[in-house]
Structures are given as structure tokens and as C-alpha cells.
Length: 410
Image (cartoon, rainbow, N blue to C red):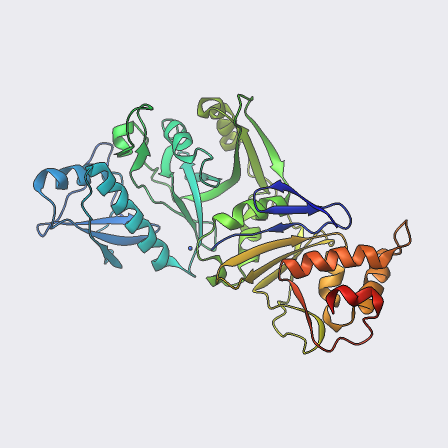
């Protein structure tokens, strides 16, 4: 069976199709516009990130650099009531903007590690309206999140351009870090505070997830448009952007629960940030979308068969519309991988419980019937090869009754 790439990290075959998507995987004080967060007397700066406090130890910096670092982080929501969960130390670079960028990376990693397994964390930007409703924009690097947030947050409140934290009830935890801005093509990036860019402060209302948008930035000029996104495609796009996904209880069901809770995900196709403003206004203006219910949880299969074709262990399983399966497993490199299988794939995966190749063919025929060309074995062989290549099933010694049709796996 021949596979053709249809997107980054996605493989598709034409008969039967097995699509694979991989992801490497984890009381407050308000500051008014322009208010500068200050270091304590011992040159420590505490900033709030994803609901925890991270301490920046500035004791090794000269006064001028301390002031610049303070200004860059002036938009961070800090609270004296929160004890820092980690401390990071600036590592001086030749250009001070690079030092600030390195501090931001350290703060981000410390916050993600502190919240691992507690909340859903997505590499995404987000803005909020005056009611606290948050639109999250998820996208891989290069999708223009910072540029987009820089424009949208002049009209809506800046929540983050880096990581969004969402609790079990849909509450959003902000991370108002400095933004990395390129003023023109000839200059390096500078680290700018939200206030310095004229971005709006958070509302007094609690923040709550209102919409989930997957970014799809075009390389050529194209009219901006929003469209509903299939739940499987949304999972395939968002799961690779999640941090510490495998450490959540029921990780796939967590993502899908949030997607369905806002009435499904949207895809934003655009080129220029300015063209998206009217579309985002419409998202905020629209009433809450009706929650969906298109998935059904399945019991994760962890036990491996001793012989024949068997499933490999998975962390979570979801059925979509009854004919697609989404699997989360840990790869040999200790990274998490999300796989979406359809066609005969789900029937074969469920049947792979220490069976022979001929038994897999029989299971596929029972579920889907005999193909038009009458060659069920050939179709199943292609699908089994794809499932084995993805590490979702494996053949173990001692398969009985494999016959000539199963010789490829012997």
C-alpha cells in the first residue's frame, strides 16, 4: 500500500486508510496599564505564569539591566500571596534582549513543569473580552501567534502568546510574558512588555475558555476565513502542541472534552493578522456554541498478547463517530504520539489480541465485508503493515495459522 504525505506528521493511504499524527511530548494582584512590576529588596522578581509564581533572581545583573528586565515583565500577573515554586537565574548574553528571551524560556519551562499533570497546557496564544471569555489560538511554530496576538490584543485583552493553561472546568490561567518582536527585517528580536506594545489588560471577570481555534497561516496572500474543524483533525493539530499530555488523567478525553465543551474547534486560514480582527469579533459576539458529543471513551489496552499479532500498550483510546479510533501511546524515545486510524484500522487493532494474520482478515471481513476486487487479504496486509510501522500492533513469535497470506510478517 502506498502512502502519500498530506500534512506534516500525517500519512494517508487510499485503501484502507490509516492516518498517523505524531506529537512530541508539557487571589491575584492586578497591575494597571503601564504599571511596572518591581524587584524586591533582594533583587528578586516574582512573576505569575499559568497560575503559579516563578522567581527571577536578578541579583547578578547591573541596575540598568534590572530595570529593563523589570519593564519587559511588567505585564506579568504577580501575587505576593503565591510562594514561588521555582527560581530561575538570568544567564547574560551579548545582547540583553537575548538574556530576557532566555529568562522567558526558563520561566516557561519551570511553569510547565510545576503544573504537569494538573491542567491542560497548550502551546498557543489567547485573547479575552471584557466578560472574561477567552479565544485560544493553537498552532505550531511559524503560524504567527505572536504577530496575531500583538494585533488582536490591541482590541481584546492579552492573555498570552506562548502557553495557555486550562483547568478541568474550563477556567483559563494566563501567562502574560514579554513578546518577542521584530521591528524590521534588519534588526534582531526585542523583548517587549504588553504595555509597551499598547496591549490591553485582563478584565476583572474570571477567564473562561470560549473558543478553540487552530491556526493555518497561508504562505501566499489569501482572504481570512474561519471554518469548523473535524474533531479528529482538531486532535491531530492540537495534541502535538500540548505539554506533558501523557501525565494527565485520560489525556485524549481531556482535550476532546474541552473541544466539545465549546461546540467544536475552528480553523483560521489567514495570511495577515489585520484581516482576522473582524472574524475574531464575530467569534466573541456569537452566543456559546452547543456542546458536542461525538466521541466515546474506550478502556485503554495495556496487556500485550504473548503470541501472534497483538496491540502495543496505549495510554488512552477514543472512538470518534463509531468508525475512527484515536490512540495515545508512548514511543520508544519516551515521547507521546497521537495516532488516528480509520478504514479497516480500528477493526484490526481491536482484533489484534494474539491472533494470526488469517484471523485478522476474518475480523476485517466481518466488520466491512469483502472488498469489490475480492482480495481482502491484500487490503488487510497493507493496513497491518501501516499499523506495525506506526508501532500500534506487532507480530510476536508463535502466530498459528498465518499461512502464505501472512508470510510478510513471519
